[in-house]
Image 1: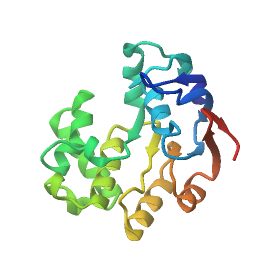
Image 2: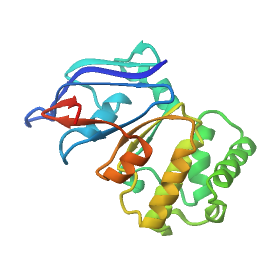
Image 3: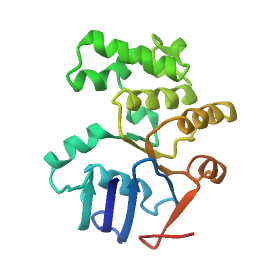
Image 4: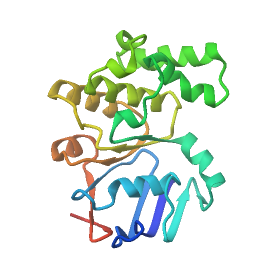
Length: 216
């Protein structure tokens, strides 16, 4: 099953030269795929377009077999595909870790009791229960990164878009993150400057070059 298909995507920020000029990529169920490329090549932009956070000037976005064009089309997409942002502080905004993780399930209509059960299950699965009641903004960069992943997994997504997930991680936390991600069943589309991490998690790689996705 094709989860995500971006076809011939074009995009430019106002007053800037084009970032994407015919980029195409597909992600199928269970697939692990990496996107490499220099800073400013448009990798994060591509992720935002996939979730409807930005709109292409041309091209089609098809998710779960349905073309998505307007904001309402993407509500389902954001429930079923989880995005881990490059900067954890863009994603964590509640006072405590438990509240941050419960936020998504509560928004999906779960009761408080159900949401807290999900919090405990996700934290236990990730071996992060010791962070449950911590103040989020006092966590280390590595801890924030792992909690960000927990907030996304609490939504039970069918695929994950990971934007530079090893940013700010020391070697130990990077190894822990890799171990967690390798054990997940979800399809993964990974953007990373880290060749070793790409090779270990998602060795099939495309390179974003000249606004297009090409084989490296």
